[in-house]
Image (cartoon, rainbow, N blue to C red; front, side, top):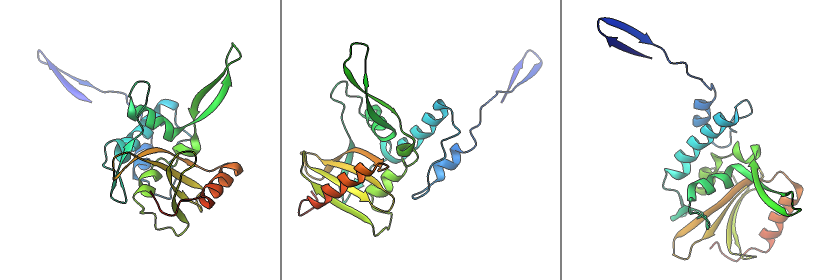
Length: 195
């Protein structure tokens, strides 16, 4: 709303704004609460998730055990944060195109998205949960896993070449039986220390 004064004429102009009631509440949610996104339009949902991402990751100096966390760099165009945001809120799937070729695509993943604010809590190890396993595994590449067994959630980091820094690769809910079995296998084959 604003007031416009033109040649002795006062005009009150009201703006129609769309209010998404739970968006501010989502910004207040802490681990282990889940974000409320089901009633959002895709545009409102993305706006809400971007605000949480900017608060917790893009606009925040994130550290894991005194090591700086950086988003993964996109090899194609260098748009680091856009790619990173996509890995934390979408899931990859394969589709066959009109030429019969298998193409990898990404689509919105509600399970990942409602837990977006969990990333920071797990990296900073402020969850105070006994069922969180932190370990490194070297197959096929060295990765460090922060695995919350109780909540079926994992954050995956990759050590950078320079010391005391990691890439945040992704984080997601382990909602498939095979995902949990893969994590159990990685844990059994873990390295002797966290890298």
